[in-house]
Image 1 (tube, rainbow, N blue to C red):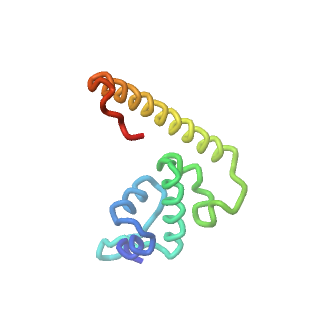
Image 2 (cartoon, rainbow, N blue to C red):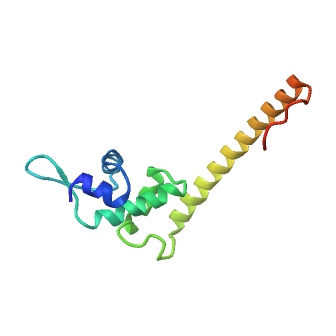
Image 3 (cartoon, one colour):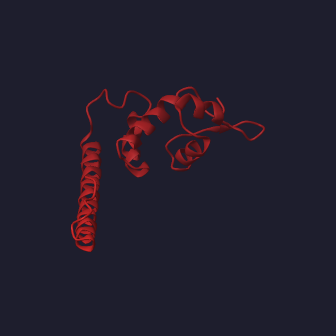
Length: 123
């Protein structure tokens, strides 16, 4: 299938597919006219990539899952390396959330001070 067909079948964009290909997560062949051609299994792989990205992993993180991207990523037991990558990503997200909450509290305190407690930020 061509890139537009794969994009439509997986709910993504051709640009994202080119990015996944550049990252080495999917592969295509070139037709005589230069169009990218993907096999039918690419749709499963792209859906798995999208699922992993949706839970907060990065493309670099997704590389750890390459051996199982062509099947049901959630079906088998997770490898120690995959679990470590997921735990590390969760720690990064927790740290970012904590930092954002600290910034929010500083801003709320500054706003309370500037307004004499007249304005309460929406929680």
